[in-house]
Amino acid sequence: MLLSRGLSTLKAIKFANRNNIQTLQSVRNSHAVNYRTAPEPPPKFILTIAEVVQGIAWWWVLWHIYTEPGHILGEFEYPDPRKWTDEELGIPPIE
Image 1: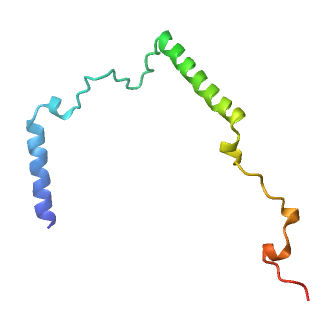
Image 2: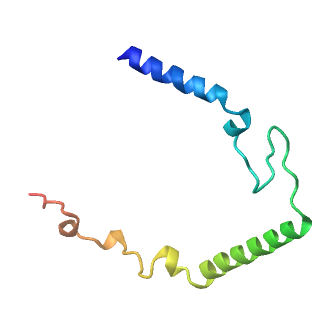
Image 3: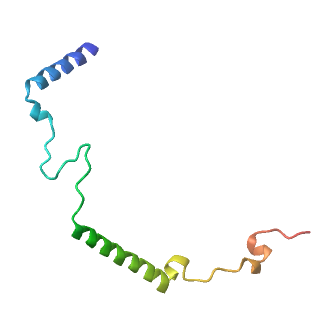
C-alpha cells in the first residue's frame, strides 16, 4: 500500500516540476495585494461617507431606544416578587 501511494506521489511531483512555475502561483487581478506592507489609506470621501453612515445608524438606534424602550425592556410591567404567595412560588406550607 505504501509503495502504491509513494509511486503516485512521485509521479505527481514529477509532472508538477515539468509545468511552468507560473501555473502554480495564484493570479489576483481583482485588487491590489499587500503582502507584508501596509495597505493604502482609503480616500477622504470614503472616510467621510463612513462617518456619516455610522452617525445615522447610531442616531437611529439611540432614538428608538429613547422613544420605544419597550423593545428592550419589555412591554409589560415586571411583577413585584414581594406580592407573590408561597403557593405561587411552590413553597409547601409550614405545619
